[in-house]
Image 1 (cartoon, rainbow, N blue to C red):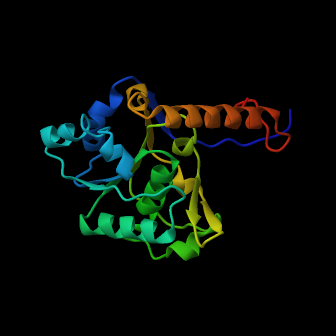
Image 2 (tube, rainbow, N blue to C red; image 1 turned 45 degrees about the horizontal axis):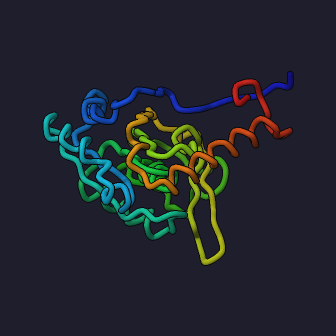
Image 3 (cartoon, one colour; image 1 turned 60 degrees about the vertical axis):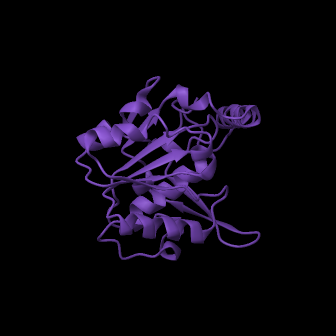
Length: 215
């Protein structure tokens, strides 16, 4: 066996219906103001409808940024960061597909009160510095695995993308609630299921950075 290193999310909760206690999990982490980063489809399909009442029950202020687009451009990331700052969020939740979770990672980093870096500063591998806000990721599709990776991808132009790669982007908690996958359109369920399968095949058959944990 070749030497390897493996890093992932600190805590995983895999539990049907667990998203309904998301507010309590935020409260346990000392949150006083929470920002949920998501996309218009999540709100349109009502996937937050059973989640948000918990915040009212806990007396925990929550704001929602729901303008994330697929392959999010820089202006979406920066708008989400400003939203986090405006509500003085001290915990960020990525709720949805990979794009929402990628944006949430960057918001948690760039909206930290002590952050002195810009988005342009952190592109590349290991360029992010300092601290980030507490981060919880809640995937609603099967495919991307963004909730357990240290990468965020941003669209920087008409045909260009850049990545931010840093252990700082690994969330504190990934909440895996299978109930959230049930309300999606059939085409999304099929496409993201195939995405998950292809990711698994690629990891298993790859000669690069292959390791027993990924197998």
